[in-house]
Image (tube, rainbow, N blue to C red; front, top):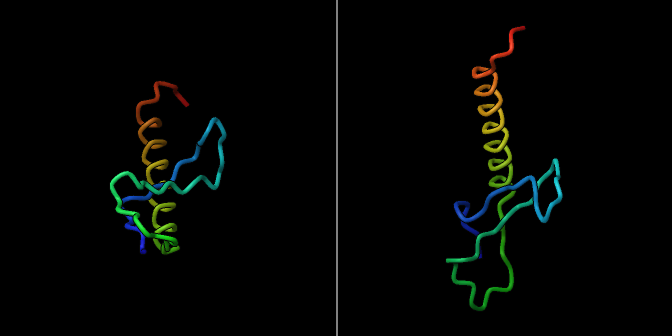
Length: 72
């Protein structure tokens, strides 16, 4: 089974622990897994998710910088 990219995401915290590499979360809530013994995840998709996560962090940092009231 090839796992759909829209059903996976990366998180940096899990069970109270933080990781710079993060965890890959596979959302199986609406995926029919009956009889599935293997799930294949394209590493290109993982790299893409990592890139998106980095871009989100950059946008967040830039937004905080713009809203900062501190004078330099």
